[in-house]
Image (cartoon, rainbow over all chains, first blue to last red; front, side, top):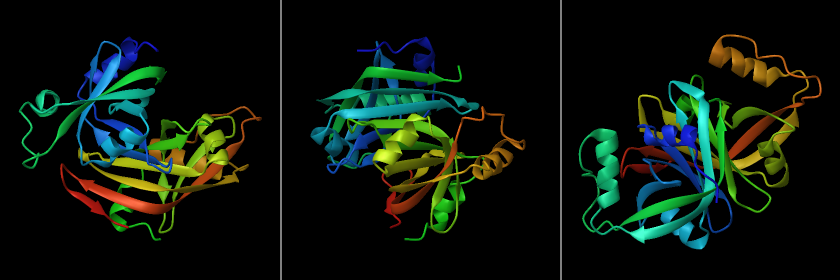
Length: 130
Length: 137
């Protein structure tokens, strides 16, 4: 396991949007934009069980997440690794992330949405332009 | 397939794109690039000694995301395949540098070989905010 490092941590802890890439069942890359936070050396994001990225991670836990500084796009961090997935029936993480990014709890889930917590354990951390 | 207008509007300066390629073991790798587009493809420049070039030469499958700078929760994802061609005159990198920075690109060592990556879209998805996903193709 790699260490996240202070430079990468700062980019993930700020209110920056991250792009997460997972693998489709045929191995094709699939990317989407997520809210993120860090805990120890892990990067965490929230999704729901009906999303493609959740389904992809069930097939193959390998993922990469990239975050950049909007004020200086040449400054960015990429974390590659494998994920663990945990059910989040109380929507704890999505509300925490929503408060971080918008200042309020999350209200966009349809009834019955099944929230999960995705944690990426870094295998490789790349920081550019710091 | 043609690249939809909503995608083209974002796939241009000054927006940065995040490009995902596949490592030799099949795992994903991402990096940030300058882009331009026309009706048929998305283009970016790289060097032959970069990891994404080696990845794309081995497996052309690629995913590219560009966010709306006004609202990063709105974005377009283009999935497709990359065609690679040498760019000895550095035409594309100079065009992109001018568009993104207003200046010529920095000097590079003579042994650095520029390549044009042309991403031909197979799937384009537009995310207009939470729960608002449209498959443009």
